[in-house]
Image (cartoon, rainbow, N blue to C red; front, side):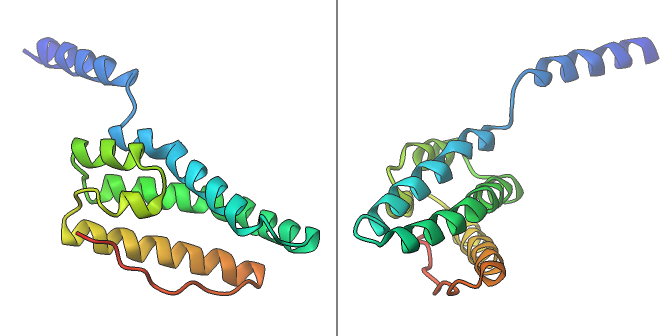
Length: 134
């Protein structure tokens, strides 16, 4: 009996080993959104301002990506929500994706806290809250 349970556990773990969590599909989403936003925001900026924005984005990118992925995992987003967010052209489009109120609130909080921490460390302005639609 113990051997059968051990074999079953090995087979389950082996079956899951090659697959990443569905939330991991969102890894490139923040990168895409920030790149588009940065390009838009700095299109008419001076080289000095552009360099400063690039530095903030360099710090913000991984922090926001990790925050989004963790919120997805922690609040257990549905597969249709993950697909919707992954396909969204920008964060504004992602706000139309189906999140529960608790998921939206948790995501907004973690993104705001993450952004504030990075900007405080860089000496940049802190963000204003922009709630997500449920």
